[in-house]
Length: 121
Image (cartoon, rainbow, N blue to C red; front, side):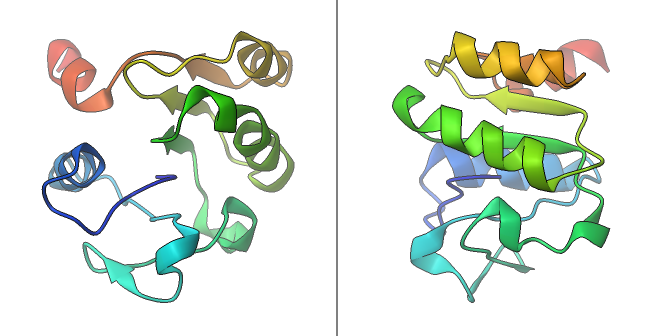
């Protein structure tokens, strides 16, 4: 999860905790907290810093729309197991979505897995 905050009042923390409760490992990416832990997971400064053998299949982005393009490009370059990228509520980047889809990665924009997952369970 890119932009995961250690602050329990922040939406990113709540979504990460929900995903963990569903059995999904959440690897925090937040350069301001790299080297520390959030929700008992080591925080990385960037997606590229996550070990390749972590097998990351989903990236959830809690950043502004303007920041999405480079994050998507980094995920596509460094995550061979990547299957889906989520952009949180209010976040869109159609050009980045097109690049992801061209690489066979599903990109979900302006949606939250904490809201969407229960609808499909």
